Image (cartoon, rainbow, N blue to C red; front, top):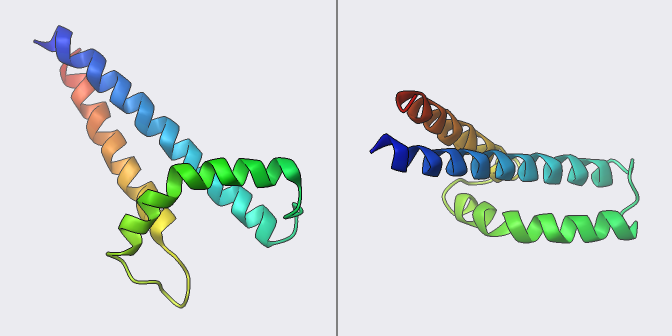
Amino acid sequence: MSVIVEPFVFVLAVLVDLYFKVVVVEIVLHWLIHFKILEADNKYAKKTMEILEQLTRPVYEKIGSRIPKLADIDLSPFVLLLILMFVSRILHNLSELFV
């Protein structure tokens, strides 16, 4: 049984880790643009932000509908990072069971 389940747990862990990195890059890029370290009209930054927002916006909206903004700050990205860390830890513990 573990021979069948372990690859799926591994692939899920890789996908969670990849999505975690996508969220972190999107947050950092957003801050760089917000604090004018990176120009908002930079075509590479703009295209990268579009791609990252397409990947993260639906999840942010689902989380944001359940968690109110705090002093006009959207906490959805940070809540998503916490959820991804939690899921990653569960998958890591599951993979250790199969070893």
